[in-house]
Image 1 (cartoon, rainbow, N blue to C red):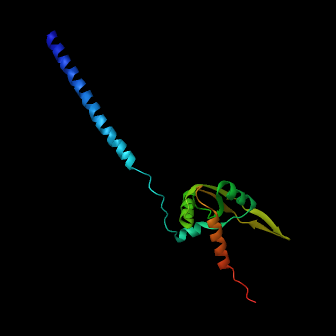
Image 2 (cartoon, rainbow, N blue to C red):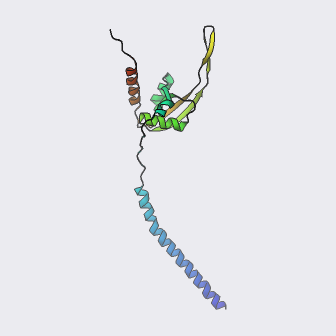
Image 3 (cartoon, rainbow, N blue to C red):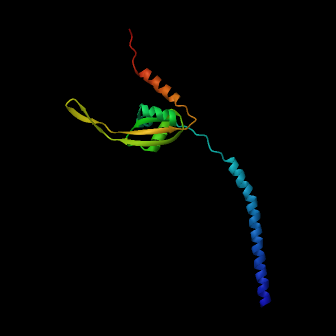
Length: 161
């Protein structure tokens, strides 16, 4: 009986070795296929969707101050006043749709209302949400500034003498 168990053990060991070698062969055959597939996969180009009415409701206006101009020059960023209920993702999508530029990041700040007096009357400056939108370094912000300036020129009536 001891001889029979030895034979059975040897057969089991041989089949185990065969399975290992077939697995290695199969793995070696599959590995190049995975590499080929990885080479074929490329990141798709960034595509922009057309702007819709909701995008223009999200962005209220640009905030132009000395600090925002410094951000524009140093970090390729613009500052917008946005709707108070919008999220960062909605702001990012709206800016990408309107300006056709890839947005790197969006930071938001809820600006509280501030008290203000005019003579004997007191009131408040309304609260709003401010968004700092940083663009990809390949995008030129001069295009946006020119577009905004031309829109303002069209909106303001010219005086005829």
